[in-house]
View 1 (tube, rainbow, N blue to C red):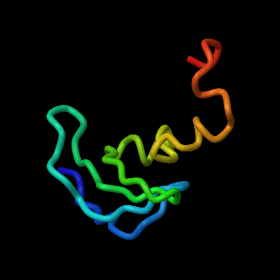
View 2 (tube, helix red, strand yellow):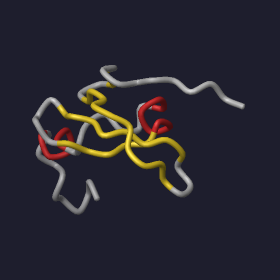
View 3 (cartoon, rainbow, N blue to C red):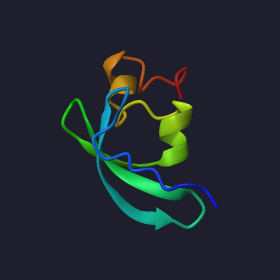
Amino acid sequence: MSKIIDLIGKRFERLVIIKQVENGKYRGRRWLCLCDCGKKIIVSTSALNSGNTKSCGCLRIKHGYGNTPTYK
């Protein structure tokens, strides 16, 4: 059995974990995070640890290519 790790208050890139929320059906433990831009997002532990989720999505919008066909 895996050890339960408390991530509240830890930072992952632009996200700071506020609290644990209800676990997802397949994604395991999920966390409510506050982005540096002020938005909140729910993220799985695996997405945080792998680095796949670095912000609420504001990084994609920030670089200016978020709505172009090439980027999508």
